[in-house]
Structure formats: C-alpha cells, structure tokens
Length: 249
Length: 285
Ligand SMILES: Nc1ncnc2c1ncn2[C@@H]1O[C@H](COP(=O)(O)OP(=O)(O)O)[C@@H](O)[C@H]1O
Ligand SMILES: [Mg+2]
Image (cartoon, rainbow over all chains, first blue to last red; front, side, top):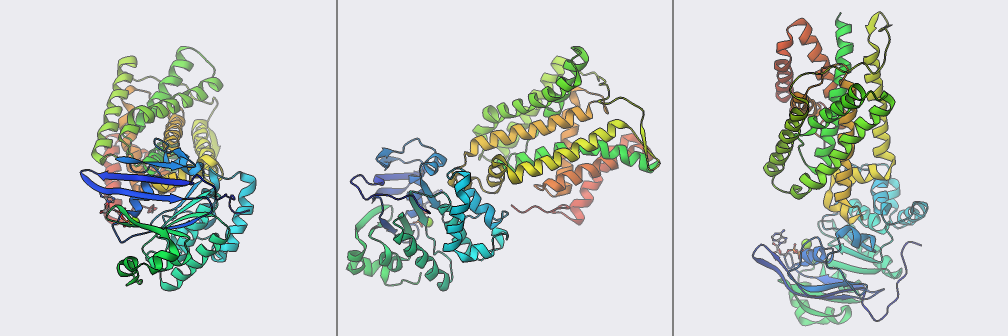
C-alpha cells in the first residue's frame, strides 16, 4: 500500500496555534492558525509573500517560532529537528521542487525512502509511484536536472510518497508550470485525495485548490484571516474578490 | 629515464590525489574549505612513525591505527570546531579552518620538533622491471592502494546508505533534511571519511618522503591546486589533478631543478585557470 491509513478522529494530526515567526526585527507571521485532521485534504491559500512557506518551515522547525504552539499527533514539536519530524511521518514537497539534480530519477525516489521505508518495501512503493507517474518510469535513469519543470514536480511528489507519509505537505506544486502540467498536478492531487492521504496543500491557485480540498485556511500578511469548508469558501465574496478574480496567477 | 620519473611521479601523485579527494569531499558535503586537510596526513604519518619505528609494532597493526586516528580526529574536529560555523559567512569558516591548521601543525612541531624522520618502506624487495621500466615496489603499493580506494569509495557512494546520504547532503543540505537525513551526522561522518582518506595518503607517503611536522601546509597547497585543476568539486578531477601534479613535480625536479617544483605547480594552475577556468572536469552541483 502506498500510504499509511489514517483515521479521522478527535485530535488533529497537525495543529498550528497562534504561530508567530520573526526574521530579524521583521514579523513575518503574526497569528497563524491551522488544523489538519487525519484523512483530511486541507488547503492553505494566500498571495505571494503572505507567509505560506514560512508557516511550512515553522511546522518543520526549519525556522524558529517567536511564539505559538505546533502539535503533531497531539505532541508539541518544539525542539524536534526537521529530519526527525520527517521520520515521524511528515512528507514534504518543497517550494521550487528541489529535486537532487545530479542524481537519477530512481536515486531521487530511493532517497525519499532511505530513512523512512524498510528496504524490502521500497521497490513495491516505487512501483505504485510509477503507476501514479508513468513519466517517471520512462525517465527512471535520467538525471533529475534534465527533466522538465512539470516532471520535476512529479518527481518531488513521488519522492515524498516514497516515505509513506502520514501527513503530506505540498508547497505550491503548481508554481511556474505550464497550464497542462498544472491540470495534471491537480488531477494527481485528487487521486491522492481518494487514497485518504492526509494532505496540507499550500497554493496561490485558490480556485483549483478549493475545488479539491475539504477545508481551507486563508492567510494574509502573516495571519489566518478566514477558514472553513472549501465549498463554502468558494462562494465567499471575500475570497472571490481577493483570490478568485484572477485565478491565472 | 622519463618513464622512470613519470612512474614515481604517479606514486606521489596518487597520494596528492587522495588528499585532494578528501578535501573536495569536505567541500562538497559541508561547503567548508578545510585548510587543515594536510594536517590529517601528518597525524597519520606521526602515528605510524611512533607506533612502528618507536614502539616497534608490526605494520599490519600500525596501518589501520594510523588511518583510524586521523579519522577520529576528523570526526571530533567537525563536532567541536566546524559545526558551530557551518552555514556561517565563508570568511568565518575559512578563518576557523586556517586556525585549526595552525594549531594542529604547531602541536606536531611541539611534540616532534622540526626535524625530518625517515620511515621504512611498507614492502621490502628489489624494484621490479615492468616493460623495461624499473619500478620500486613501494610505488606499486601506492598506486594499487589508490586504485582500490577509489573503486571502494565509488562503491560506497553509489551503493551504501551512508554514500547516498553523503551525496544527498552534497547536493542540497536543506532538502536532504526533508528526506529524514540527519545532516549533521552525515557531515561529521564525511569529515571522518575524508580525514581517514588523508590518513591513507599519509601512510603511503611516509616511506617516500621524509616525515616532518611542517608537511601539512605544502601538501594542502598541492592538493588544493590539484582540486582546482580538476574542476573544484569533481572527485575524478581531484584524482586526475593530483596525478598530474605528482608527475609534473617529479619531472621538473629532475630536468629543471627541485627548487622550481612549486613554481611549475602554480604555472600549471595559472595556465588551467586561463585556458579552462572551470577545470578539467567541471563540476555542477
Ligand atoms: N529568510 C527570510 N528572511 C527575511 N524575510 C523573510 C525570509 N523568508 C521569508 N521572509 C518574508 O516573510 C514573508 C512571508 O514569506 P513566505 O512565507 O515565503 O511567503 P509565501 O510563501 O506565502 O509567498 C515575506 O514578506 C518574506 O519577504
Ligand atoms: Mg512560498
């Protein structure tokens, strides 16, 4: 099986409460709230510079938080190093894809499994990743740096899935891709949704994200300003005005 | 005579190549230019000297110890001295490794004084004649060791979990963490490996040059130049660069004057930088 099954129970899988982050004297996040329950597909939407990536980095302890609390599986994450959080089940598809350019497609996928998946199981998971992304199978021996942007994005997603994440965080997977690939990425996301993977999708592409998410949080200038069911937010005039007016960002 | 000189040049070149390889490994994994790399070589030489010549321990016991000790020193160095400055401004890191170089080489001078020591050959016997070229057995040992080590390292980097971690960290430290890789541990192990390789170079060089406390810096400079000629960051480039400098050293030493060895090393460096600034094997991260 590709992903660990999760149950939608009382305690959220990920809970971000009143998060603030400073860069030097500048307050990048002031007041971010976020909650992801097991099995949910949650979108975090906001304009460029709103603080989405910083929120992700704070979740991973890749930046220090000024205040607030983050819990993963009910446990405060303060002081847990990034690589431990990953080993605890948080899979990440980082902004800008960040594939290992000088390694082959297969080597990239293996790295996704290295610290998370027992050796014997990795090949079965790789087979299911290849089912999801046939193009990666075609290009398996190719250096990741020679792939197109869309293919690299798929590789970054496949690499994260190789670790059988309990919670998958994706930071703007559609950024900078041709429309054809954007559609493809969202198709794959809705496939993943069907597998009941718990997903936190960070996106500027509000319309497409709200269409596939269960729940969404909107962040503006470092604050969570709106949250609710995705289907409600789509019809919310504030969201429509600020984010859906120009879905082609 | 030319081939004679070239062959023994290849032997010294192998040692330079190994030092350059370790140097590049630290640069790739930690983005640290380690000016103390030559000192790891010197540590291995003096450990070998003390254990073998002074204490009379057999070579089979001494050689592993002489490689292991610099590896441990490399590991400790990373934990104590380098880790606090990883990711800091380049000048900060460089200053720290230069400081480390001075401390280690002065420590060697305090313990062993400035005088040269000679180390017996690793293998006894008359030189062999191969295709009419007289080759000292010691040279063959050096060349064979370097080939075995290079192949072994290639295998290590491609097939083992440690090698995969090391390559991931070399390419992108932040993303390596997202794979669950313990980047700090990998860098420390990379330091140990790199210092261990320098240790191998040390035990191979000990019988062919005089061992002395001041050797670290000239060896560092040779391997630094070898790495630049090879295309800074490329392992194969470091090996080829090291061999090139070894051979050149020997030829210049014989045909021109041993006083001009350094001059010609730098001339080749300048030439490569003028004609092919990216080095012989350009490295892309
Ligand atoms: N390393 C940093 N140093 C200083 N400011 C930063 C840093 N990273 C992000 N910021 C600032 O924090 C704010 C939020 O950035 P980011 O989280 O990257 O936004 P988003 O991902 O929503 O586009 C921006 O104003 C950005 O300039
Ligand atoms: Mg961002």
